[in-house]
Amino acid sequence: MNIRKMKKKGISPVIASIILIAITVAVAIAVAGWVFGLFGTYGTAGGVTITVTSLDTDVTNPGNPNIYYTVINSKPTSITISSIRIQGDFASVNPNQVIGAATTVATSATLTGSSDLTAGMDYTIQFILSDGTILTSVAKAS
Image 1 (cartoon, one colour):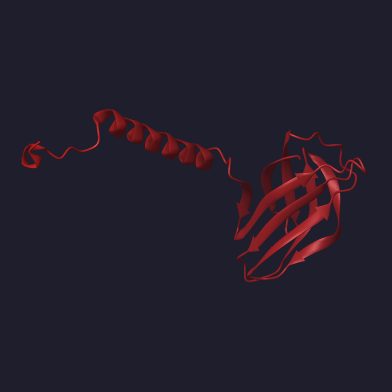
Image 2 (image 1 turned 180 degrees about the vertical axis):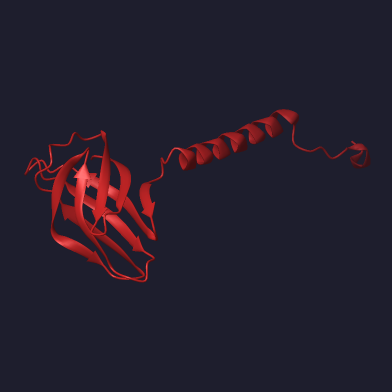
């Protein structure tokens, strides 16, 4: 066999098409996740961002779910979370949570006085600040 007569070939058109389709699907999933909020939910208002990381049903103490969230306060002043609502029902937060100026805090609260939550369901959560600002987020109960 004469090596000089062999020509170099690239990848076949079928393999190239499969690679292009895989890249397109990956980009579509990333865009859909960003647009529809599949990768985390958060509320933002006036320099304050709250991201809900977990909403746990408490099977040992029904009616008192635990909510875990991160607060980013970009304001030059402290903020106070005075209450939290789940699905429109008020739930008390004891004590009122104060977040210092220009800080990020990962925190949690046990919500008392709220209705029982069902694992796997999405719930609308509103954080009410002492200045009347309301930040809304959606979280799936686990």
